Length: 273
Image 1 (cartoon, one colour):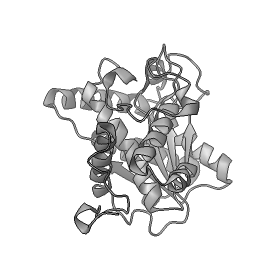
Image 2 (image 1 turned 60 degrees about the vertical axis):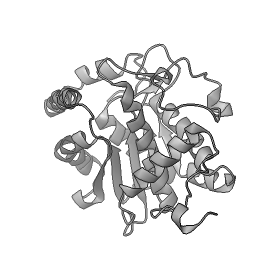
Image 3 (image 1 turned 90 degrees about the vertical axis):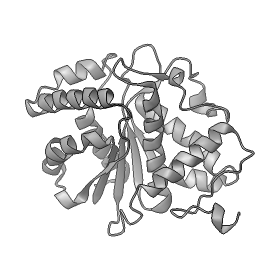
């Protein structure tokens, strides 16, 4: 199992051995970093918590669709920008943050066996068969193989706590459709909802999106938690994303989701809002 120095202080998943693949080592390092950034008692007082991870991108057509059934190869590099369809405003280094959001869902569901996690996001990119939810779910499966290579039972237990939602195309529908999907699967609503997203989006969630689902689903403010993961590396990139975030917030305030959906729903396959 390894000695005390090798053990993670935040969970019982041990770092991978040095002789494993570079991809596995990178995932292991990022996973344990992510664990350290999440409150271990996040859901201590709740019976039916839900983690929502909204997608930011999909796999590109270079990632073969048959991997959805067979799984990604062990030597897959989830950080490689060529594996993703990135918009003009998205930087190649952002793929690491997308993976970190996925690992956050794994860390939380592993710590909290009664928690569920939803990867939310539709078919937001042209020229690829992947939805954001399919992309994130497949990466979660692959990540668990790297983190728990000899424990298929633990892999399956965590995966059984995760479900995809592939119809949403923007932040508001990420929340609404994830909650609706949760209710469809479990016949009740969660008693706490934690959203994993970029740090700079926290104010928009708290001022716009959380009040909306409070009204729609009868949740109270203390039942809604924001988990900020991912900060900008470049001042210019940070300014651009904050400006874009402000534009999106203005669209939501005006209840003008057409502009948002035009950006995020090129294939027009989402459900009506």
